[in-house]
Length: 493
Image (cartoon, rainbow, N blue to C red; front, side):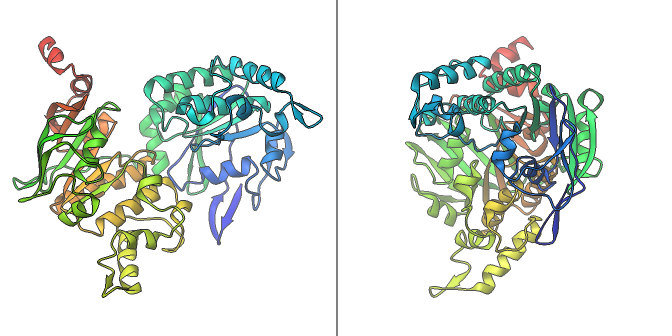
Protein backbone atom coordinates (compact mmCIF):
# COMPACT_ATOMS: atom_id res chain seq x y z
CA UNK A 1 0.00 0.00 0.00
CA UNK A 2 1.10 3.54 -0.83
CA UNK A 3 -0.67 6.62 0.57
CA UNK A 4 0.46 10.26 0.47
CA UNK A 5 -0.85 13.31 2.30
CA UNK A 6 0.35 16.73 1.12
CA UNK A 7 3.14 15.00 -0.77
CA UNK A 8 4.37 13.15 2.33
CA UNK A 9 4.33 9.33 2.37
CA UNK A 10 2.18 8.01 5.20
CA UNK A 11 2.53 4.54 3.63
CA UNK A 12 5.31 3.63 1.25
CA UNK A 13 5.00 -0.05 0.42
CA UNK A 14 3.21 -1.33 3.52
CA UNK A 15 1.77 -4.84 3.63
CA UNK A 16 -0.10 -7.03 6.09
CA UNK A 17 -1.26 -10.64 5.87
CA UNK A 18 -3.66 -11.95 8.52
CA UNK A 19 -4.91 -15.52 8.85
CA UNK A 20 -8.32 -16.72 9.98
CA UNK A 21 -8.23 -17.82 13.61
CA UNK A 22 -5.17 -15.86 14.68
CA UNK A 23 -4.48 -12.79 16.82
CA UNK A 24 -1.99 -10.72 14.85
CA UNK A 25 -0.19 -7.78 16.50
CA UNK A 26 0.39 -4.67 14.37
CA UNK A 27 3.24 -2.72 15.96
CA UNK A 28 5.22 0.44 15.32
CA UNK A 29 6.02 3.84 16.73
CA UNK A 30 3.50 6.68 16.53
CA UNK A 31 3.62 7.89 12.95
CA UNK A 32 4.80 4.53 11.57
CA UNK A 33 1.67 4.27 9.41
CA UNK A 34 -0.47 1.82 11.42
CA UNK A 35 -3.52 4.09 11.60
CA UNK A 36 -3.38 4.93 7.89
CA UNK A 37 -3.15 1.24 6.98
CA UNK A 38 -6.14 0.41 9.22
CA UNK A 39 -8.18 3.19 7.62
CA UNK A 40 -7.47 1.71 4.19
CA UNK A 41 -8.43 -1.78 5.40
CA UNK A 42 -11.76 -0.42 6.69
CA UNK A 43 -12.68 1.80 3.73
CA UNK A 44 -12.03 5.19 5.34
CA UNK A 45 -9.16 5.91 2.93
CA UNK A 46 -8.45 4.80 -0.61
CA UNK A 47 -4.82 3.90 -1.34
CA UNK A 48 -2.84 5.75 -3.99
CA UNK A 49 -1.60 2.34 -5.12
CA UNK A 50 -1.58 -1.22 -3.86
CA UNK A 51 -4.16 -3.99 -3.64
CA UNK A 52 -6.36 -5.57 -0.98
CA UNK A 53 -7.26 -9.27 -1.05
CA UNK A 54 -9.81 -11.20 0.98
CA UNK A 55 -9.69 -15.01 0.75
CA UNK A 56 -7.33 -14.59 -2.19
CA UNK A 57 -9.70 -12.41 -4.22
CA UNK A 58 -8.98 -8.73 -4.84
CA UNK A 59 -11.53 -6.38 -3.29
CA UNK A 60 -12.08 -2.62 -3.08
CA UNK A 61 -13.71 -0.97 -0.08
CA UNK A 62 -15.27 2.30 -1.21
CA UNK A 63 -16.39 3.15 2.33
CA UNK A 64 -16.79 1.74 5.82
CA UNK A 65 -20.17 0.15 5.06
CA UNK A 66 -18.70 -1.85 2.17
CA UNK A 67 -15.84 -3.03 4.41
CA UNK A 68 -18.30 -4.01 7.14
CA UNK A 69 -20.40 -5.98 4.66
CA UNK A 70 -17.21 -7.82 3.71
CA UNK A 71 -16.71 -8.67 7.39
CA UNK A 72 -13.92 -6.19 8.17
CA UNK A 73 -14.68 -4.12 11.30
CA UNK A 74 -12.45 -1.82 13.39
CA UNK A 75 -13.02 -0.95 17.04
CA UNK A 76 -11.11 2.14 18.08
CA UNK A 77 -9.73 3.30 21.42
CA UNK A 78 -12.54 5.90 21.58
CA UNK A 79 -15.39 3.39 21.42
CA UNK A 80 -18.33 4.16 19.16
CA UNK A 81 -21.17 3.05 21.44
CA UNK A 82 -24.04 5.49 21.57
CA UNK A 83 -24.42 6.37 25.27
CA UNK A 84 -28.05 7.50 25.16
CA UNK A 85 -29.57 4.24 23.88
CA UNK A 86 -29.75 0.76 25.36
CA UNK A 87 -27.26 -2.06 25.13
CA UNK A 88 -29.61 -4.07 22.90
CA UNK A 89 -30.10 -1.15 20.49
CA UNK A 90 -26.33 -0.56 20.30
CA UNK A 91 -25.72 -4.19 19.37
CA UNK A 92 -28.27 -4.20 16.54
CA UNK A 93 -27.88 -0.70 15.14
CA UNK A 94 -28.77 0.23 11.57
CA UNK A 95 -29.33 -2.58 9.12
CA UNK A 96 -29.21 -5.18 11.90
CA UNK A 97 -32.31 -3.76 13.64
CA UNK A 98 -35.24 -6.21 13.19
CA UNK A 99 -38.30 -4.35 11.93
CA UNK A 100 -41.56 -4.92 10.13
CA UNK A 101 -43.49 -2.22 8.31
CA UNK A 102 -41.11 0.41 9.69
CA UNK A 103 -41.71 -0.69 13.31
CA UNK A 104 -38.93 -2.13 15.47
CA UNK A 105 -39.57 -5.71 16.59
CA UNK A 106 -38.38 -5.24 20.16
CA UNK A 107 -38.76 -8.85 21.30
CA UNK A 108 -36.71 -10.07 18.34
CA UNK A 109 -34.16 -7.31 18.90
CA UNK A 110 -33.63 -8.30 22.53
CA UNK A 111 -33.47 -12.01 21.68
CA UNK A 112 -30.84 -11.48 18.98
CA UNK A 113 -28.85 -9.04 21.12
CA UNK A 114 -28.81 -11.56 23.99
CA UNK A 115 -27.59 -14.25 21.60
CA UNK A 116 -24.64 -12.08 20.56
CA UNK A 117 -23.69 -11.37 24.20
CA UNK A 118 -24.09 -15.05 25.10
CA UNK A 119 -21.69 -15.95 22.30
CA UNK A 120 -18.92 -14.05 24.13
CA UNK A 121 -20.09 -15.15 27.61
CA UNK A 122 -21.34 -11.71 28.70
CA UNK A 123 -24.36 -11.06 30.95
CA UNK A 124 -24.77 -7.31 30.45
CA UNK A 125 -28.36 -6.03 31.06
CA UNK A 126 -29.93 -5.40 27.65
CA UNK A 127 -32.02 -2.43 28.81
CA UNK A 128 -29.15 -0.56 30.43
CA UNK A 129 -28.01 2.67 28.77
CA UNK A 130 -24.63 2.15 27.10
CA UNK A 131 -23.33 5.35 28.68
CA UNK A 132 -23.77 3.80 32.14
CA UNK A 133 -21.54 0.81 31.37
CA UNK A 134 -17.96 0.37 32.52
CA UNK A 135 -15.21 0.73 29.87
CA UNK A 136 -14.81 -3.04 29.54
CA UNK A 137 -18.59 -3.52 29.22
CA UNK A 138 -18.66 -0.91 26.45
CA UNK A 139 -15.87 -2.82 24.74
CA UNK A 140 -17.87 -6.04 24.99
CA UNK A 141 -20.97 -4.34 23.53
CA UNK A 142 -18.85 -3.10 20.64
CA UNK A 143 -17.61 -6.67 20.11
CA UNK A 144 -21.18 -8.00 20.13
CA UNK A 145 -22.20 -5.40 17.55
CA UNK A 146 -19.27 -6.36 15.32
CA UNK A 147 -20.23 -10.03 15.57
CA UNK A 148 -23.85 -9.16 14.73
CA UNK A 149 -22.54 -7.95 11.36
CA UNK A 150 -20.73 -11.31 10.96
CA UNK A 151 -17.28 -9.73 11.32
CA UNK A 152 -14.52 -12.10 10.22
CA UNK A 153 -11.65 -9.60 10.51
CA UNK A 154 -11.73 -7.59 13.74
CA UNK A 155 -9.24 -4.72 14.13
CA UNK A 156 -8.66 -3.49 17.70
CA UNK A 157 -6.85 -0.21 18.37
CA UNK A 158 -5.38 0.00 21.92
CA UNK A 159 -8.34 -1.92 23.42
CA UNK A 160 -6.85 -2.12 26.94
CA UNK A 161 -5.88 1.55 27.35
CA UNK A 162 -8.61 2.31 29.91
CA UNK A 163 -9.05 -1.14 31.46
CA UNK A 164 -7.95 -2.54 34.82
CA UNK A 165 -5.87 -5.74 35.09
CA UNK A 166 -8.96 -7.80 35.89
CA UNK A 167 -10.87 -6.32 32.94
CA UNK A 168 -7.90 -7.03 30.64
CA UNK A 169 -8.03 -10.72 31.65
CA UNK A 170 -11.75 -10.80 30.79
CA UNK A 171 -11.06 -9.15 27.44
CA UNK A 172 -8.29 -11.63 26.60
CA UNK A 173 -10.63 -14.55 27.37
CA UNK A 174 -13.15 -13.17 24.86
CA UNK A 175 -10.47 -12.59 22.22
CA UNK A 176 -9.21 -16.16 22.58
CA UNK A 177 -12.76 -17.47 22.19
CA UNK A 178 -13.18 -15.42 19.00
CA UNK A 179 -9.90 -16.82 17.70
CA UNK A 180 -11.22 -20.35 18.28
CA UNK A 181 -14.27 -19.42 16.19
CA UNK A 182 -12.00 -18.53 13.27
CA UNK A 183 -12.15 -14.73 13.57
CA UNK A 184 -8.97 -12.97 12.42
CA UNK A 185 -7.98 -10.30 14.95
CA UNK A 186 -5.55 -7.45 14.25
CA UNK A 187 -4.32 -6.18 17.61
CA UNK A 188 -2.72 -2.73 17.80
CA UNK A 189 -1.03 -1.98 21.12
CA UNK A 190 2.00 -0.24 22.63
CA UNK A 191 1.97 -2.72 25.53
CA UNK A 192 4.44 -5.31 24.34
CA UNK A 193 3.90 -7.57 27.35
CA UNK A 194 0.29 -7.99 26.20
CA UNK A 195 1.44 -8.85 22.68
CA UNK A 196 3.68 -11.65 23.93
CA UNK A 197 0.94 -12.98 26.21
CA UNK A 198 -1.90 -12.90 23.68
CA UNK A 199 -0.79 -12.80 20.05
CA UNK A 200 0.25 -15.51 17.57
CA UNK A 201 2.18 -13.40 15.05
CA UNK A 202 3.37 -9.80 14.83
CA UNK A 203 4.04 -7.31 12.07
CA UNK A 204 6.25 -4.27 12.67
CA UNK A 205 5.95 -1.05 10.66
CA UNK A 206 8.42 1.82 10.48
CA UNK A 207 8.26 5.02 8.36
CA UNK A 208 5.26 3.77 6.38
CA UNK A 209 6.81 0.43 5.49
CA UNK A 210 6.41 -3.12 6.74
CA UNK A 211 9.73 -4.15 8.27
CA UNK A 212 9.08 -7.60 9.71
CA UNK A 213 6.41 -10.27 10.18
CA UNK A 214 7.22 -13.08 12.59
CA UNK A 215 5.76 -15.67 14.94
CA UNK A 216 5.60 -14.20 18.44
CA UNK A 217 7.12 -17.40 19.85
CA UNK A 218 10.24 -16.82 17.72
CA UNK A 219 10.76 -13.21 18.84
CA UNK A 220 11.47 -11.29 22.06
CA UNK A 221 10.77 -7.79 23.37
CA UNK A 222 14.28 -6.39 22.77
CA UNK A 223 14.15 -7.46 19.12
CA UNK A 224 10.72 -5.88 18.67
CA UNK A 225 11.82 -2.58 20.22
CA UNK A 226 15.02 -2.34 18.17
CA UNK A 227 13.10 -3.16 14.98
CA UNK A 228 10.42 -0.56 15.74
CA UNK A 229 12.88 2.27 16.39
CA UNK A 230 15.41 1.20 13.77
CA UNK A 231 18.33 1.06 16.16
CA UNK A 232 19.67 -0.96 19.06
CA UNK A 233 17.64 -0.47 22.21
CA UNK A 234 20.75 0.35 24.26
CA UNK A 235 19.93 2.19 27.42
CA UNK A 236 16.27 3.18 27.38
CA UNK A 237 16.74 5.31 30.49
CA UNK A 238 19.40 8.05 30.71
CA UNK A 239 21.83 8.13 33.62
CA UNK A 240 20.73 9.55 36.96
CA UNK A 241 22.66 11.81 39.31
CA UNK A 242 21.49 15.41 38.86
CA UNK A 243 19.70 15.81 42.22
CA UNK A 244 20.92 18.61 44.49
CA UNK A 245 20.41 19.31 48.19
CA UNK A 246 18.30 22.42 47.48
CA UNK A 247 14.62 21.83 48.26
CA UNK A 248 12.30 22.86 45.41
CA UNK A 249 8.95 21.59 46.74
CA UNK A 250 7.76 20.74 50.24
CA UNK A 251 4.42 19.05 50.91
CA UNK A 252 3.36 18.86 54.57
CA UNK A 253 0.43 16.95 56.09
CA UNK A 254 -1.66 17.15 52.91
CA UNK A 255 -5.26 15.91 53.09
CA UNK A 256 -7.76 15.74 50.22
CA UNK A 257 -10.68 13.52 49.26
CA UNK A 258 -8.52 10.41 49.13
CA UNK A 259 -5.07 11.74 50.01
CA UNK A 260 -4.36 11.49 53.76
CA UNK A 261 -1.43 12.83 55.77
CA UNK A 262 1.02 13.03 52.86
CA UNK A 263 4.37 14.75 53.45
CA UNK A 264 7.52 14.75 51.31
CA UNK A 265 10.21 16.96 49.76
CA UNK A 266 11.56 17.18 46.22
CA UNK A 267 14.96 18.70 45.43
CA UNK A 268 16.10 20.74 42.48
CA UNK A 269 17.44 18.43 39.78
CA UNK A 270 15.64 15.40 41.22
CA UNK A 271 13.17 13.10 39.49
CA UNK A 272 10.72 11.78 42.07
CA UNK A 273 8.59 8.85 40.89
CA UNK A 274 5.22 8.14 42.49
CA UNK A 275 3.60 4.73 42.11
CA UNK A 276 0.63 2.85 43.48
CA UNK A 277 -2.47 1.04 42.31
CA UNK A 278 -5.35 2.83 40.55
CA UNK A 279 -7.31 4.75 43.18
CA UNK A 280 -4.37 5.01 45.57
CA UNK A 281 -4.42 8.82 45.40
CA UNK A 282 -1.49 9.38 43.02
CA UNK A 283 -3.32 11.54 40.50
CA UNK A 284 -5.27 13.42 43.18
CA UNK A 285 -1.97 14.32 44.87
CA UNK A 286 -0.65 15.92 41.66
CA UNK A 287 -3.93 17.75 41.06
CA UNK A 288 -3.86 19.22 44.58
CA UNK A 289 -0.23 20.36 44.25
CA UNK A 290 -0.98 21.96 40.87
CA UNK A 291 -4.01 23.83 42.22
CA UNK A 292 -6.46 21.87 40.05
CA UNK A 293 -8.18 20.33 43.08
CA UNK A 294 -8.95 21.72 46.51
CA UNK A 295 -7.56 20.14 49.67
CA UNK A 296 -8.85 19.97 53.24
CA UNK A 297 -5.63 20.86 55.02
CA UNK A 298 -1.89 20.82 54.65
CA UNK A 299 0.82 23.08 53.26
CA UNK A 300 2.51 23.32 49.86
CA UNK A 301 5.76 25.30 49.64
CA UNK A 302 7.68 26.11 46.45
CA UNK A 303 11.23 27.02 47.40
CA UNK A 304 10.65 29.33 50.36
CA UNK A 305 7.19 30.50 49.29
CA UNK A 306 4.10 28.94 50.92
CA UNK A 307 1.04 28.74 48.70
CA UNK A 308 -2.38 29.62 50.11
CA UNK A 309 -4.78 26.72 50.63
CA UNK A 310 -6.26 25.55 47.31
CA UNK A 311 -4.52 28.30 45.33
CA UNK A 312 -6.01 27.43 41.93
CA UNK A 313 -4.10 26.54 38.78
CA UNK A 314 -3.20 30.14 37.88
CA UNK A 315 -1.63 30.87 41.26
CA UNK A 316 0.28 27.58 41.23
CA UNK A 317 1.56 28.26 37.70
CA UNK A 318 2.74 31.71 38.75
CA UNK A 319 4.57 30.08 41.67
CA UNK A 320 6.42 27.79 39.25
CA UNK A 321 4.33 24.57 39.38
CA UNK A 322 3.15 23.09 36.06
CA UNK A 323 1.08 19.94 35.54
CA UNK A 324 1.03 17.62 32.53
CA UNK A 325 -2.28 15.76 33.13
CA UNK A 326 -2.99 12.10 32.50
CA UNK A 327 -5.92 12.75 30.15
CA UNK A 328 -4.09 14.78 27.53
CA UNK A 329 -6.93 14.74 24.98
CA UNK A 330 -9.57 16.12 27.36
CA UNK A 331 -7.42 18.10 29.82
CA UNK A 332 -4.07 18.82 28.19
CA UNK A 333 -4.83 20.19 24.72
CA UNK A 334 -7.59 21.76 22.62
CA UNK A 335 -7.80 19.18 19.83
CA UNK A 336 -9.46 21.47 17.28
CA UNK A 337 -6.87 24.23 17.71
CA UNK A 338 -3.43 24.42 16.16
CA UNK A 339 -0.15 23.56 17.83
CA UNK A 340 0.82 27.21 18.06
CA UNK A 341 -2.54 28.27 19.52
CA UNK A 342 -2.33 25.56 22.20
CA UNK A 343 1.16 26.70 23.19
CA UNK A 344 0.28 30.40 23.06
CA UNK A 345 -2.85 30.05 25.23
CA UNK A 346 -0.81 28.55 28.06
CA UNK A 347 1.75 31.36 27.80
CA UNK A 348 -0.39 34.38 27.05
CA UNK A 349 1.53 36.70 29.38
CA UNK A 350 4.83 35.97 27.67
CA UNK A 351 3.51 36.42 24.11
CA UNK A 352 1.62 39.68 24.73
CA UNK A 353 2.16 43.14 26.12
CA UNK A 354 -0.27 46.01 26.76
CA UNK A 355 -3.11 43.75 25.71
CA UNK A 356 -1.62 43.02 22.28
CA UNK A 357 -0.55 39.52 21.25
CA UNK A 358 2.74 39.24 19.37
CA UNK A 359 2.69 36.82 16.46
CA UNK A 360 6.49 36.86 16.40
CA UNK A 361 6.68 35.73 20.04
CA UNK A 362 4.13 32.97 19.42
CA UNK A 363 6.12 31.78 16.41
CA UNK A 364 9.31 31.84 18.46
CA UNK A 365 8.13 29.73 21.41
CA UNK A 366 6.25 27.35 19.08
CA UNK A 367 9.26 26.82 16.80
CA UNK A 368 11.51 26.31 19.81
CA UNK A 369 9.11 23.83 21.42
CA UNK A 370 8.60 21.83 18.22
CA UNK A 371 12.35 21.69 17.66
CA UNK A 372 13.35 20.77 21.21
CA UNK A 373 10.69 18.06 21.55
CA UNK A 374 10.93 16.76 17.96
CA UNK A 375 7.20 17.26 17.33
CA UNK A 376 6.27 15.70 13.98
CA UNK A 377 3.71 17.87 12.17
CA UNK A 378 3.10 19.46 8.78
CA UNK A 379 3.35 22.93 10.30
CA UNK A 380 2.73 24.84 13.57
CA UNK A 381 -0.80 25.50 12.27
CA UNK A 382 -1.78 21.83 12.10
CA UNK A 383 -4.66 20.98 14.50
CA UNK A 384 -3.44 18.98 17.48
CA UNK A 385 -6.25 16.46 16.98
CA UNK A 386 -4.59 15.34 13.73
CA UNK A 387 -1.33 14.40 15.49
CA UNK A 388 -0.37 11.00 16.84
CA UNK A 389 -0.80 10.35 20.57
CA UNK A 390 2.91 10.76 21.21
CA UNK A 391 3.05 14.10 19.41
CA UNK A 392 -0.06 15.33 21.27
CA UNK A 393 1.76 14.55 24.50
CA UNK A 394 4.76 16.53 23.27
CA UNK A 395 2.51 19.54 22.59
CA UNK A 396 1.26 19.38 26.20
CA UNK A 397 4.88 19.30 27.35
CA UNK A 398 5.92 22.11 25.02
CA UNK A 399 3.28 24.51 26.31
CA UNK A 400 4.23 23.82 29.94
CA UNK A 401 7.98 23.90 29.37
CA UNK A 402 7.66 27.30 27.71
CA UNK A 403 6.80 28.58 31.21
CA UNK A 404 10.19 27.35 32.55
CA UNK A 405 8.60 25.78 35.66
CA UNK A 406 10.57 25.14 38.86
CA UNK A 407 8.44 22.05 39.54
CA UNK A 408 7.04 19.91 36.73
CA UNK A 409 4.30 17.41 37.64
CA UNK A 410 3.69 14.65 35.07
CA UNK A 411 0.82 12.16 35.39
CA UNK A 412 1.43 9.00 33.33
CA UNK A 413 3.63 10.89 30.81
CA UNK A 414 4.21 7.86 28.55
CA UNK A 415 0.76 6.22 28.58
CA UNK A 416 -0.36 5.20 25.11
CA UNK A 417 2.84 6.22 23.32
CA UNK A 418 5.41 4.05 21.58
CA UNK A 419 8.80 2.98 22.91
CA UNK A 420 10.74 5.38 20.71
CA UNK A 421 8.76 8.38 21.97
CA UNK A 422 9.04 7.04 25.52
CA UNK A 423 12.82 7.15 25.22
CA UNK A 424 12.56 10.78 24.06
CA UNK A 425 10.35 11.65 27.05
CA UNK A 426 12.84 10.02 29.44
CA UNK A 427 15.68 11.97 27.83
CA UNK A 428 13.72 15.21 28.15
CA UNK A 429 12.91 14.54 31.81
CA UNK A 430 16.61 14.05 32.51
CA UNK A 431 17.52 17.21 30.60
CA UNK A 432 15.05 19.21 32.68
CA UNK A 433 16.41 17.74 35.90
CA UNK A 434 19.97 18.53 34.80
CA UNK A 435 18.84 22.14 34.33
CA UNK A 436 17.60 22.29 37.93
CA UNK A 437 13.89 21.52 37.47
CA UNK A 438 12.31 19.27 40.08
CA UNK A 439 10.25 16.63 38.26
CA UNK A 440 7.50 14.62 39.97
CA UNK A 441 6.07 11.89 37.78
CA UNK A 442 3.32 9.32 38.37
CA UNK A 443 3.54 5.99 36.56
CA UNK A 444 1.67 2.68 36.75
CA UNK A 445 4.66 0.82 35.31
CA UNK A 446 7.15 -0.29 37.96
CA UNK A 447 10.08 -0.75 35.51
CA UNK A 448 9.50 2.81 34.29
CA UNK A 449 9.45 4.15 37.85
CA UNK A 450 12.74 2.42 38.62
CA UNK A 451 14.38 3.43 35.33
CA UNK A 452 13.53 7.14 35.18
CA UNK A 453 13.47 8.16 38.87
CA UNK A 454 16.07 9.09 41.45
CA UNK A 455 13.72 8.27 44.30
CA UNK A 456 10.35 6.49 44.46
CA UNK A 457 7.32 6.99 46.71
CA UNK A 458 4.53 4.40 46.67
CA UNK A 459 0.97 5.28 47.71
CA UNK A 460 -1.66 2.95 49.16
CA UNK A 461 -5.18 4.08 50.06
CA UNK A 462 -4.21 7.75 50.05
CA UNK A 463 -1.05 7.45 52.15
CA UNK A 464 2.62 7.01 51.38
CA UNK A 465 3.25 3.33 52.10
CA UNK A 466 6.92 3.17 51.15
CA UNK A 467 9.96 5.05 49.86
CA UNK A 468 13.10 3.79 48.13
CA UNK A 469 16.06 5.08 46.16
CA UNK A 470 15.46 3.99 42.57
CA UNK A 471 18.98 2.60 42.23
CA UNK A 472 18.19 0.18 45.08
CA UNK A 473 14.56 -0.51 44.13
CA UNK A 474 13.16 -3.96 43.55
CA UNK A 475 9.87 -4.57 41.71
CA UNK A 476 8.72 -7.17 44.22
CA UNK A 477 9.21 -4.81 47.17
CA UNK A 478 7.54 -1.91 45.32
CA UNK A 479 4.56 -4.11 44.51
CA UNK A 480 4.31 -5.07 48.17
CA UNK A 481 4.20 -1.34 49.02
CA UNK A 482 1.45 -0.90 46.38
CA UNK A 483 -0.71 -3.42 48.23
CA UNK A 484 0.15 -1.95 51.63
CA UNK A 485 1.99 -5.14 52.61
CA UNK A 486 5.56 -3.87 52.77
CA UNK A 487 5.94 -4.56 56.47
CA UNK A 488 4.73 -8.14 56.05
CA UNK A 489 7.10 -8.55 53.11
CA UNK A 490 10.02 -7.09 55.07
CA UNK A 491 9.26 -9.37 58.02
CA UNK A 492 9.19 -12.36 55.70
CA UNK A 493 12.53 -11.30 54.22
